[in-house]
Length: 434
View (cartoon, rainbow, N blue to C red):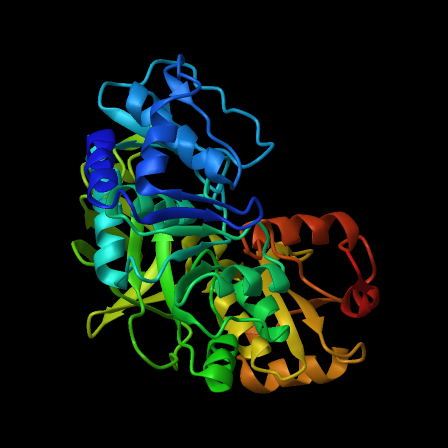
């Protein structure tokens, strides 16, 4: 089904440019890409593992589709997952979850589910053939595969492979086109904004993978009139919601409206529940009750008002303070509003007072090194007393992971390993370059 659809796309756009590989200075028309995918190394295994961020990744996908092999994309250098048993008939694609709520799992899809996700994204975002995608994010990750690879192969949306996220590389790649679509993560948008390198010919700007701050969204818009559209999705179901408004949001919790053909509700317990033809078939090899039959029950707490999805945090991230629950996002929003705060995370750690449950920790990167007392006073003035962090960790920077996310789980581990043994005074004033 996927390869048949690709064949129709290749024939319909045979003489048009499909891929421009900027680092390799190579171009493929759809016709040439079809020929390249029809020859060369054959796929002999039942599961193929394309890797990397080049045209070879695309060719690997096409050859796998042609051979009827299951595709399991991997990041460059990533080890192949152990798949202990044969996949049920009809499954064609495996995604590795990002493991934000536990150990990684494989998510299995049918061809119809992949096609539905691509259709929903192209139709909702208005991806156009005359606005080629700039390929900066990983092609192997769910975001890149759904926004870059599938629109190319199933809808004829050209792809320009940048080869690097460096500002100068981005500018050079954008110059090769009259107009472009640029999908990235907040950390990259921040880097490009700081370097004043966001190309002027970006017609559609998309951000996913991590929360997009209002400050960044508004700053980019103020400088050049470019609206960054916030996109909310999941490996298990593809695109969920998209902010299609023409001006910056005023509420950081706003994730946008459900994508076309996607139904979003709030389940008992307050978590977002997604129904669509793009929801994966199952987890593999161990199914999960939260996924299947066209429904995915997320762990994201949310609300729906006026047809707009608002995200309130993750159920698993709630901090238990003496029996009262607080979402770390609530604390982070207040701290991030201080002009001297560059980035921050809040999380809970076991309290030395067993009756309190957890102690709130604020992990903060500030613009100046002497912000401790002032920021604590700011928190006390803007948060209920029981939500004010009791322990503070000041750093020079909070590095995001390879997918542009600030992981509370990882920073909590670092904190417990490097700081928790210190005295309370040292905890509040510690500063690190890690």
